[in-house]
Image 1 (cartoon, rainbow, N blue to C red):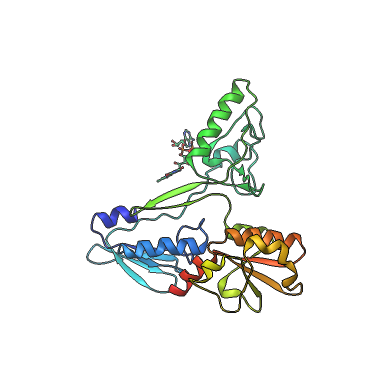
Image 2 (image 1 turned 45 degrees about the vertical axis):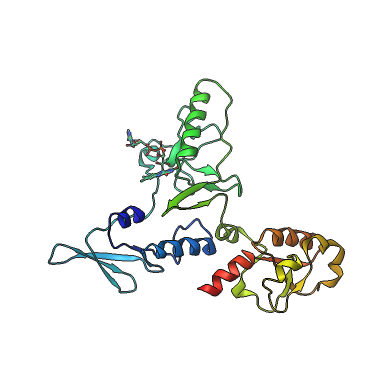
Length: 282
Ligand SMILES: Cc1cc2nc3c(=O)[nH]c(=O)nc-3n(C[C@H](O)[C@H](O)[C@H](O)COP(=O)(O)OP(=O)(O)OC[C@H]3O[C@@H](n4cnc5c(N)ncnc54)[C@H](O)[C@@H]3O)c2cc1C
């Protein structure tokens, strides 16, 4: 909607209660999208929820936010997410899950085996975490519909869960996500990731190639290219958190796994040098 309104010549402000747009994205990726929106003239009001609306004398509206700011508007579009309406299922006595959706098994059977349910209204198993989740996307809904039809026809089809893949086009660019975000993983337990703004007194290990260091270096970091890491573990401290750097996070992930398997205290510096560049640009 934001993009379409901009194309129609409107002056558009996106008010968002969270400190980032596109909640499923990790923050550093959301920052890229936010920059892209701003470059196309969209105003972002982050970390500020809408508190109410007031009609003005000229027939327009005033949007009031929790922080006390006001935004004049001719049009207001609410896009605050969806929740399954399971009243009918609940009234029929079907089991409702912990996330508020209809509970079904792998064959889309509800707690009454003669009643099947599919789509936005059912809870699905997240195939990464194994936890129940609500995923309002058409791909899983369609798949579940086919499986329910198979089951009704006597076939042994099963729904294997969902990983919530989505893609959004914005002013010629695309943002996409799949699987679980860092936020979710953090909620579920320990995640061997640190951020550039939280390095503390960690030992910095840079696993990039020397040719990359010629372009940009992190002061104080020890350089051991990933390919040499297993043979040079003796150079690393066993009594400190080791924060691992590469360009985008992928080699640092592999290095983190290697060090953790050897009993060292390793964490991936999320997003690598690309994130560092973005944070210093903010
Ligand atoms: C604006 C918008 C954009 C979206 N864009 C995308 C997208 O780009 N990609 C994507 O993957 N997903 C998208 N979705 C989500 C996608 O539309 C849903 O995930 C999908 O339609 C879910 O299918 P469903 O069969 O569960 O429910 P629905 O498609 O909502 O179908 C349920 C139907 O049941 C009817 N109904 C409800 N109660 C009763 C009743 N008591 N008796 C009879 N009928 C009833 C409703 O009227 C409705 O027609 C979008 C959703 C919206 C609203």
